[in-house]
Each structure stands twice: as C-alpha cells, then as structure tokens.
Image 1 (cartoon, rainbow, N blue to C red):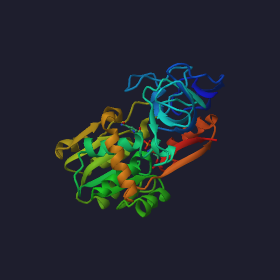
Image 2: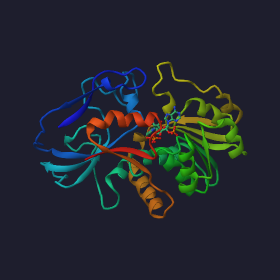
Image 3: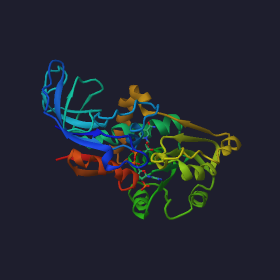
Image 4: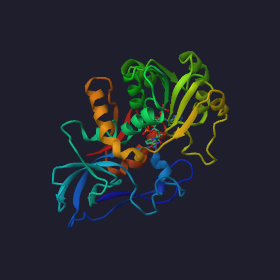
Length: 331
Ligand code: NDP
C-alpha cells in the first residue's frame, strides 16, 4: 500500500521534501470494517491549510500521518453489513492506494448516475460549497449581479452556473484568456475578467455598472479589495476561500476597502461547508437536476497517475493549472 505522509510543516509553498512516500502491507478489513482500493483522489486548496499547525475548522495533519484527502474507493473485501465488494464509496480516506474503514463518514455512491470523480466535484464538496455559499450565505435573489472569483475552478464554475440558472448577471474572474473564454463561451457567464491581464477594479466597473449584489470570493487579496469597491447597496460578500493567501509566509492581507461595507450597508460572511451536511442530499438533487437540464456543465481536470504524483498535482492548484475540479485518478 503506497501512501503519502506529511514529513515536515511547509513554510510558504509546499516543497517535495515536505512529503514522505512510503509503502506498507495491505491490511485485512476485520470485523465491522471494509477494505477498498482508491480510484480517485480529490485535490483541494484547503489541503494547504491542513499542513499548518494552527487552529482551524479541522485539526492539522500530524507529522508522519497519511495526508488527509477526500477520495472515492472501490470496496474489495468487507466485514461491514452496509458495504459490499464492488461498491464505490466516497469519504475522507487519505492519499493511499488501499484503505480500511469502519464506514464512519463514508457514503456509497451510484456510479451509474455520474462517474466517481463527479462525487468529488459538482456532486461533492465543491458543489455543496458553491450551492450553500451562494444560496444560503449569499442569500442570492433572482436577477441580481453576481461576481465570482476563481471562477474557472471547481467551486467557482458551479457557483457561477447556479447563479445563471437563477437568472442572474454573472461575471467570472479567472487567470488567462483560455479560462475566460471557457466561462463565457461554454459555461454561459455573461462576462469574464482576466485578472492577470487587466485591472480588475476597472473591469468590474465596466461589467457590473450598477454594482455587485453578491461577490463570491475564492481568492482574497487584491481581487477581494477590487470587488469591495464595486458593491451595490445591501451587497453580500461570501468569504468562501482566499487561495491567493494560502502560501503566504507573511500575515494574510486584510481588505483595505472594507469601509465600503459601511457605506453600502453590506455584509461579509464566511462559512464552512461541513455545517450544511444535513442538507447535502437536497443540494445534490438540485445540482443533478441542473446538470440534467443542461444548466450546469461539469468540468473536471483529471490527472492519471499514482499516489506518488500527489504532491505535483496539488501544486497545480496554486499555479492555476487546473480547469474545473482537479482530481488524481489512480491507474
Ligand atoms: P479551484 O478548482 O478553484 O482551484 C484553485 C484555483 O485558484 C486555480 O485554478 C487558480 O485559478 C486560482 N488561484 C490560484 N492562485 C491564485 C492567486 N494567487 N490569485 C488568484 N487566483 C488564484 O479550487 P476549489 O474550487 O477547490 O476551491 C476554491 C476556493 O474555495 C478555495 O479558496 C478553497 O479554499 C475554497 N473552499 C472553501 C470551502 C468552504 O467550506 N468555505 C470548501 C471548499 C473550498 P486561476 O487560473 O484563475 O488563477
């Protein structure tokens, strides 16, 4: 069983020697447990935060522990009444080829409805994040103007398309011309802003002339600051993430334009998707229906390889090399 363990706490960007590649014998499941082989591993920006030894919504991954990751496994042997060989199961099983689980936090998935990777993307945690972030935290109303950063990523691409399905004007912010044309030409966004090529503040003045009602922020930093200058009255700023800050060795850059919340009687609110677990089933039904109706197009970036490719694949997120949900599919 090849596995990736955390070897050292990174400072700034994660380096290859922050990881340890090891191999241990494959375990038998034992009573009340099942064993499975990993099919697809999710790569998430939040993983960077789990490597730091500081209080957060989950404890940090310990030094010498298997790296935490969501994945889909295929059950190979079971002494658990609810899981049978051949079942596909999604859970937080870590970066390893074989898994033994007591089933806690694990959920069987139906691979006849969608491929395993989609249960890590549109129908999984990123899809849930987009849904609850936009509809609950953002309190989206039909027809509003919505701006999404990290718009060509796993969460952003779904958030923007949900807003389109709700009849909103949607502007996506992403890095590079390919991602921007994907947003407009394929995913139905009304406009896209390439933050690497243009001044975001000016571009938002052009694309959201009446102001932004909901700003769904995945990136933080300068882009958040630019969006804050364009808020409409009673706007909602959804703090989903701040990937531009995750590799900082200096403190997180705070918003310098936050007084526009005062002037615009706006609010800014963060959330953690796990708090909505009781309502995932409803969200998944709604997202599936939008996919079926062609309102949401699912984009996945599948890297094929072995668990040893995990570190390099994770780094892609921070270089903007993924389009849509990034996963590592094991051969
Ligand atoms: P993505 O698929 O969006 O991948 C990350 C993307 O971030 C990259 O493709 C890149 O796109 C962009 N990016 C990287 N560095 C920068 C930078 N310095 N400035 C601006 N953009 C950058 O990841 P996810 O959809 O999985 O996650 C998106 C956000 O949602 C993250 O901040 C994550 O932490 C957050 N999140 C929050 C949850 C919650 O419960 N609150 C749950 C899940 C995710 P580009 O080429 O456009 O730069």
